[in-house]
Length: 337
Image (tube, helix red, strand yellow):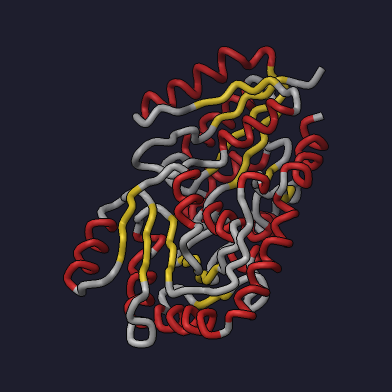
């Protein structure tokens, strides 16, 4: 019989957030016959913390491991609290690292970070980038296990004729720099006057309204879809030719992996963990953060060199085999069994 697991993290999925990887891992582990007690889906921060603690206390006696999502935001402190509870009750706990800004958080909160990581049974990093960064902080028990992607859910489409139709999918947040996509789009209009940009994602910090006003004042052919369920934006993507990712800070964005799985050639900033999943010029195109001129040139290059764009799409899809649950699950089983 496989052990029971408590999984504390971010289950929140509503009109203001994009889905996290938490629920997918719960689903996959449950399919492998682990019993998983998870929390929390509450949006109120105090209620969320109380539910996390309650789920932990209620199920600690029958659980062998505690998985803890670790983020760089205020949610970081949930992880610290749950790690201390795990230590007190002598349950093995496994931090799972998330977010391109996590190292900055560790540097800002050194004492809390050390207490969180030092006594972990093992530390799981979904990206090679974070694994290297955390290992560099003298923690030697970091294991790379990528977030899994159900490739069967993504129908690969090789775009034999790229059109100037661009897709951006992310939360509207300053750190994801959606304005870069808009300005890069604006720069290609002289060469491709019929171009269209579609932007999908919820607003996080007021950035969406700023983008809408800019698009309206400059009479740009941009569609803002707000948050869409995954199946809706996947269906929408069939009508687009190039995917843009514009982050200032990033780790392993699921939306980029999904775009690659769908056959969309990706143009992305080269920050954080991005260069670990995209080989510039081979499985995607990389540009410097904030450089909308370089991004606009990359868009034009793909539109004018369609054979290169097709090779990029094929190579990216091939690389994603490493992210299937069948490839990933053995790494989890080594730890949890």
